[in-house]
Length: 71
Image 1 (tube, helix red, strand yellow):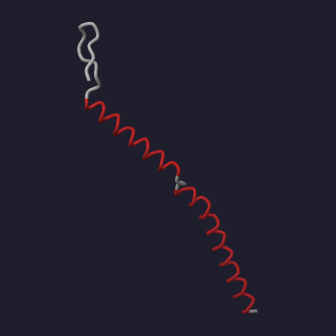
Image 2: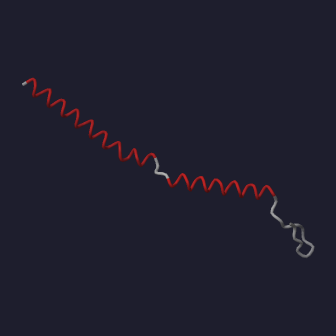
């Protein structure tokens, strides 16, 4: 569908621009979907300190039990 504006050239959107626009639209949708999921770093930030604390507590408990057994 081409329009003529007072003798000017065709102003319809070329196909490569339309394809580029559709590709960008798909990329934005994919990014929005990715942003809805929690980032893996959020899980790591929560789980890592807990794991370190649990390991430290287990080591301290083991050392105390070993020392108490030796006495």
